[in-house]
Image: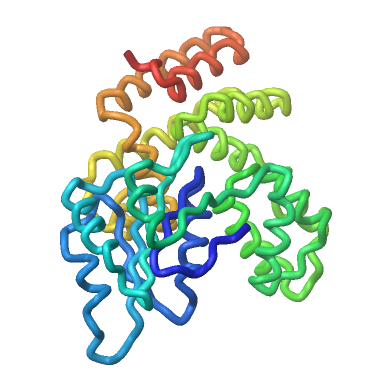
Length: 316
């Protein structure tokens, strides 16, 4: 079930891309919301919702990563939600870990006056989601093409969404079938490594081990896998070194990322580690590289490294 329009909405789920997409659809294309991350809350954001625009534009506020809201923001939200403006949407998004739930404090604030909704797409529903996404974008994607895209790129919605755009550019006006997907995304080791990194640095141990197993069973070069992990680590260290207040566009530029959504995701992942922990992971990667080149087996070295990254108690 999709969230309905309401003055106040709390959306929670495992994927930040899906959350933001659902939030923007709730607000509607006719409204340009003010968008901030929870850690960037300055105070007075809810007052803007109640202040009429000089030119009569509709107001809306989208707050992402609400787990990082400061205490002052929670107090301001509590005061605002006592009497929210009915025609100025406020959407709060919370990214949770696998099998996580919406934060109790925010749920308690929002439920009396708005809606609380989980946003997710199950693995078995991803191909259908891709088909619907392609239709919205005006791309004719065959059902077998949608399934092939999920098989090729994995379960990351942001990557799948970007892939639809690539297919539309590569095959304008054509019905995109499984064969065309294979033609466009031939040699997908890097895509699968990206998925592995996303899960490992997202602290999804079970998911990262599944991704690693898929790569090893497909015969991917273990040093290429290790190189992909090292590359993601370098990106996260660059992001971690930037102040939290730096806008996402500047984060992307400073870290050498192509998209703002990458900067958003990498910032979320970087927050799960201290800089010392990231440095420790770098040392582990160096050790893994030395071990692989000395003849150690990839089915021992790489699982140990991935466990060290994704495991909750790995870096102690």
